[in-house]
Length: 460
Ligand code: C2O
Ligand code: CU
Ligand code: CU
Image (cartoon, rainbow, N blue to C red; front, side, top):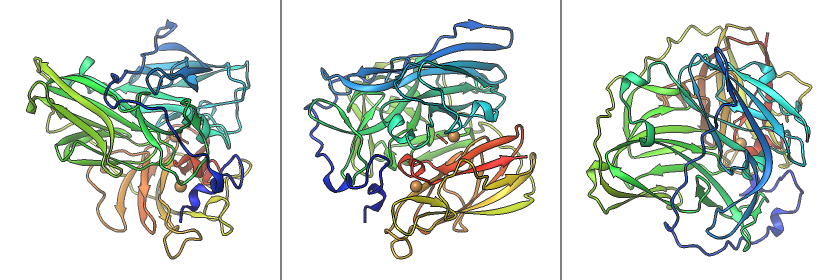
């Protein structure tokens, strides 16, 4: 039943004798949720900004007073946020000061293949590499993370990830909450030993969520509107973000602003997915607490403590951003997720990842429909029902339908990562323009992509 935990990149019989998690004690809501640091450019040129970002081992206080060894960008467990602007390029030099090879992928980025962080194209310890991000795409909340072949799950779990926010040309005039009222919330998970060490052993045992690098923190807010940018970077947890039934006004998904705001009470986020919501805390009196949870496990993400009033001239307009027209598709492809028959690996169209193989060749500039099916069902799969999600590099897609039914609210904008439940078929449509070369598509449950559920497309 929990087969997807059996196969790990680190060994075969680990699941059977998984280390019992015994996390350090902590008091919930005693620590304030930190905000990721903002990375400052080392220089600013005519039409681009230059950044430097070392990868290094460090420690972080996930549990108060306990230092947990982690892998970081810039020494920060949640890597520093890069603030980019639409139309203005960024050149980032990644410097590897780790004891191991690594690479960096900009998830959601429309970038050249050379800057996409291919899993075998590694930055060796002591080496550095410049990646160029043109930012010629609509404003959106992206994130950067390690993509090292067979190691990405562990590397991201231990901390190699951060936010990359592109501000769209259209955003200022919309009047959405901004500045200190625009708050990133990066949700991760872990299993911990009594010293706070992170146990990396895919196993059926539950993990604990931590938020912006702290376990169950609180965050003071004024009684006014906030824009919250949510990112799920857990290993395999599908979280259902909820304010206990109160309204979350979703304004953006992976690919940026939605056409119009959608009122929701719960938002499902699979690993790699983002959602942006506006929450109006003016409905609450000073002194009240508003709990953001993962409703699936009824586990706190962060408690908002409403501390007082503040002026608020922000708003949520009825129209946010027009979606690009859907061009006619010239090709249809099928993508099937399933475990291999022996249950040790994960495959796409019955093949595990091979970096020497090109799975799909796509003509640049064309539009295609991909039918993504999750064949790991309770009765049809080799090891029972397993959730997968689908992520495509290079270009965002539109969700056409789920099992023939209209996409869910919040899924109607531009997406790059999408849940595919057992037995389900999700049809998406994408236009492959702008760059040629090799790019990946994969399940973004990194324990799965890590052991085969990944494939290569070549734009020609
Ligand atoms: Cu979030 Cu292939 O990546
Ligand atoms: Cu990606
Ligand atoms: Cu999967």
